[in-house]
Image 1 (cartoon, rainbow, N blue to C red):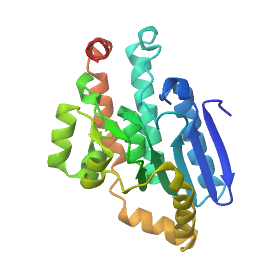
Image 2 (image 1 turned 135 degrees about the vertical axis):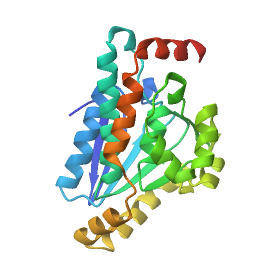
Image 3 (image 1 turned 30 degrees about the vertical axis):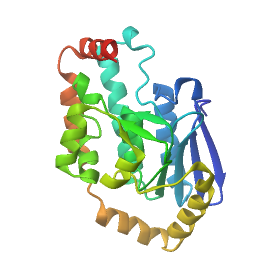
Image 4 (image 1 turned 180 degrees about the horizontal axis):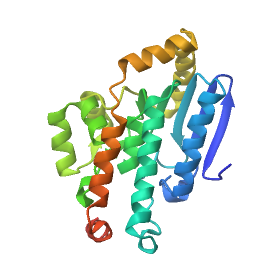
Length: 240
């Protein structure tokens, strides 16, 4: 059990709350491992719905760069691989995954939201994906599948933030709803998931899946393994 992740079980719903508000819910190695275990555990326990949300000002600020200088390039590569593993587990879960985003969200936090089947954005939310600024291909194909290749190229090359309204227009967000409406959305998700037997829901998700796990992992590793990763990260952080 990790203090960085709060897990609540409400019937067939497992609610996972990123609980590092002082760090804008940045994805530390500990939090990523806790999330992977919780997503796997929810499915193993027969959950129908997994809700992902963040405590405090936002959903997630993405990769936690707090101690990056003390880590080797190999350490950083492994952390990125584990984030990709988390994204794949969320995207392939037999549960109905619901992402609830508010505030300012960045990088891998945006990718985590994008891996969910239902992506509910508060009207005040914003999103930015700067990974390519330091040469990292993480969540890129999945983002393109949601918004279209041309739109993805524009957003990812510029690494500029986009609003909740734009996310809805592009298909990245499923709908907009303020946080006070999220409990009703959770009930709706539970009703939707319960409308099918678990085996039928698994078959439906598998039939409609556009996931390419091996390809996505290979692209990530190739990009992160390019020599000079720490120098690229340093240049990115200096320019922020």
